[in-house]
Image (cartoon, rainbow, N blue to C red; front, side, top):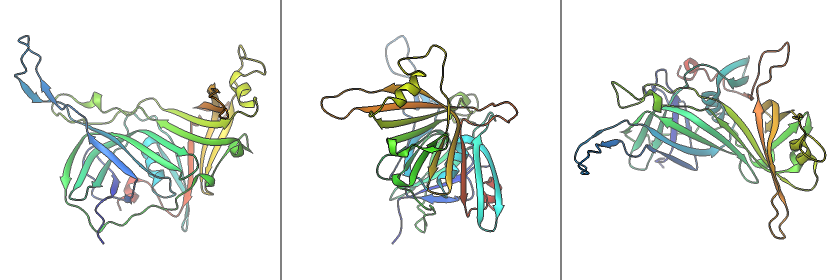
Length: 322
């Protein structure tokens, strides 16, 4: 049986130039990538008549959602964060992904099988990652902006390459080395990169020429049953109400299975709500922000670091395309 719906990805050596090799093939639950609307310009003359038209700037945007896995999902964190190191040998390698301060984002080619054709998207950069954990799959949504698209023929010999996938019960979270997972009903991690292609559209081409890196924001939203006051007090910084000058910080580690760990060296509670709705149990929603750790005598780290151990030798571009 041929496969006619798929997503293939491969890192680009040059922005918006199609990669020669698609290193991974995935089976997302959805893929909604399209050209940005209204790529034609209609001149607004004082006559009030729409008469003059020309092609305007062109770009793409959208998202796709896949199960969090041990082999392919780390690649999206690499492209979002930008920093990467690897060590190990003999089929066991530990990969570390961390934020980069380089001015440009990594880009990748994405090929989406659409039954009758392959839709190729070039110059994709990640604007947002959302890791959602509730009571089914641990799912990762990848949001992108891109340069342009084109058609190609289906690759009906595709083979999916994901590694081990994870259900919600395989995810735990520690605060200062104490497992707080039993207190949490659901959580969502978001990593915003601020990737921007709009500012790279200008003279000489209607398509973006690069993707600029923006400000990184890492938030963790946790849904917690309101059965004690500890999290509200952590938000307040005091026992009976908001403290004047006290901000409580803690280190958090999110474990996905046994071989993936996302570390947040400093995290603070930004909001805490406990709405009362009829006779339903009270649900407390906490939003926490991850911060960079600049402890004296140590190199700045964070706001998040991801460590993955698997059998992949490397996620470096040269090794992926070798």
